Length: 436
Image (tube, rainbow, N blue to C red):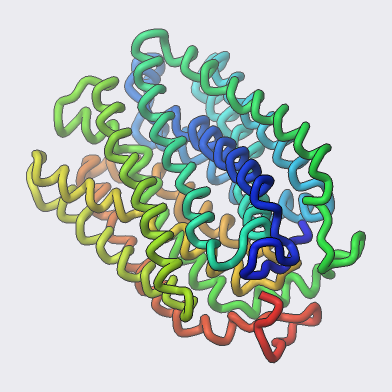
C-alpha cells in the first residue's frame, strides 16, 4: 500500500474529501466490527462445545488463540501484497474469506475440523486491520488521527461484545451451529459493498507521494523497521497489554458463569455489558490523548503508561484479592474500561514514526507483535493455567502483564523524539518532520 503524507488541514495532500472520508470510515468500522464478531463469537459457545465434545479449557482457549496466531503469521506477507494492489479490493477479498470460513464452522464434524476452520477465519482477517488503519491514516489529518484510529479499533471491542452477547443467546436457543451461520452473513454483504466502492474510488489506491510501480525496496523496508526502536518497544508493550485484553475478552463469560453462578446466556450478556465499556474507554482515551498530544505527540506514550498501570491494578485486585461480588466486579469493570485505551495512541505513534510509504508495513509489524505476544497467547495461556490453578488465579496472573506493558511504553517514550524524524528510502534520518 502506498500511503500519502497527511496535512493538518482537510483537503491537503492525501486527505480524502469529508463525505468520502466519512463513508470510508463507516464501511471500515462496520467490517472491523464484523471481523471481531466472527472472531469472538466462539467464546460464548464454550459450555455448548464442551457438552458436544469432551474439551479442556486449554482446547477451548485454542479455538480463540488460533485466529490471532494465523493473523500474526500472515499479516506481514499479505500486507506486503496489499501494498502492490487495490487496497479496498484486498479488503473485500479478506472479508469474503473470513466470513465464508465462519459459515463453514457451523458444519464442523469434530474439534479438529472446527479448529482448522477457525484457522481459515484468521487467514481471511490477517491483513485487514493493517490495511484499513493505513487507509484511514491517509484519509484523515494527523490532528484527528488518534481519535479516528481509536474509534476504528474500538469497533473490535463492539464486534466482540456483539459476538459474546448474540453468540450466547443464539447458541442457547438455536444451537451453536446456528450462531456460526448467523455470524457469517454480514461480512459477505459488506464484502460486496466494499468491492463496488473499490471500483468507484480507484484513486484511493494511488499515492502521489510514491511513483506507481516503484515501491520502496525490501532492503530499505527492513532497515527502516530495524532502526525504529520506538516501533519495536511500543509493539512489545501493546502485545503485553493485549495479552490481558484478549484473555478478558475470551474468558469473561466463563468466569461469570463459574464464579458468579450465572447461566451461560446470562453470563454472556453480562460480560458483553462489561466489555462494552472497553470500547467506550478506548474512544474516550483516544480523544483525550489527541488533546494532550497536540503540541507534544510523545504524550501519547505517556498516556499509555498510565492506562497500563491502572489496568494492572484494577484487574489483579478484582480477580485475585477480592471475593466474587459487587466490589470485585466494579474493579474489574474499571480495568476493562481502561484495558484497550492504549490501542489508538500506540497505533498513531507507530504511524507517526513510519515513512509515509511504509505506514501499512509499520502497522503490520505492530499487528504481528500484538498477535504473537498478546492476542494469540492470552486465551490459550489462560486456559492452560486454568486447568492447573483455576480460572480466577490464571486471570490474576495474566493481568500483571500490564506492568510490563507500562515499562515498555516508558522506554518507547524515551526513543520517540529521534524516531519521529522521518526516514528516507536509504534508511537515513532527514532533518525535519515536514513530510508528516
